[in-house]
Amino acid sequence: MKFITFEKPNGERTCGWMNDDQTVVDMYEASSGKLPSKLLEVIENWSSLVEEINQLQSSPISKGKYELSEVQIKAPLPRPTSVRDFYAFEEHVKNARARRGLEVVPEWYELPVFYFTNHLAIKGPGDQIQIPPNCEWFDYELEIACIIGKEGRNIKAQEADEYIFGYCIMNDWSARDIQAKEMKVGLGPAKGKDFATSIGPYIVTKDELQSYRQGNRYNLSMTAKVNGKLLSSGNFQDIYYTFGEMIERASSGVTLYPGDVIGSGTVGTGCILELGTDIHRWLKPNDEVELEITGLGTLKNRIIE
Image: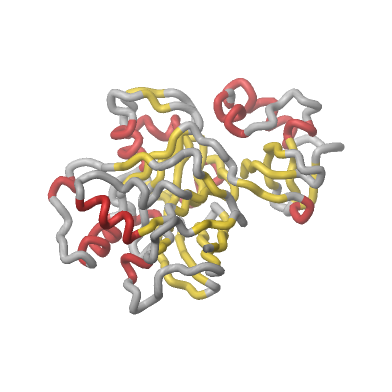
């Protein structure tokens, strides 16, 4: 299923799913209030709700169904419980470090690393992204994220799939000049990432991606366009560390909770930092960035001053 959060014609915000015929269902309204109106509550209580949701989906729906053109799709999880972003694509690491005259450090191959970003600065499809103060080098990052579906601690990589609720597109917006300065101090990224992270347009449950599965990876094409021009192109199957390995690392000595977001890090060529400003300048106001991943849809945002 493709789970969404959306705003109805009357201005109410609710959650539900998107059908293949470009209609959406408000599960709260369609179930006469039996199902939650917030997607985080659905994920937290999935095991007790899944049977009723599946039954509702397979039944004729008399109320709570809308045309996609009638509603406004928002970030599927406007306030996730946390956001960890990894650094898991080798090509991205090599390219980004080479731009700074650096090689990949041996430690990168020893364990997957991540940073925490601002889980209260989440943006969704169509939201405007404001360039932070004092930033001249503004960048996008083409990523995929998984959403944790049940509580777990010290999870083994081979068991991690049962803790994943679904997947979505993620854009880890970056103020590169701010990020470069603060990381010279030995901490970060912090303010270089603090202002916005886009996710959406929906969360796709893992069963819908099964046809793309190849071992412990997925064959998903990933692209990024700026103002309609294709800049980035990669594939999720090229990731060095799997989500299983990332989840094992993230949950070591720590409890993961339903609604936690785990980002993959940028796919190879998936940002301007890698491509270089000879290929494309840094982002400016009025630029539109469009990320697309097979099976996960398209995530568009426009940049503002």
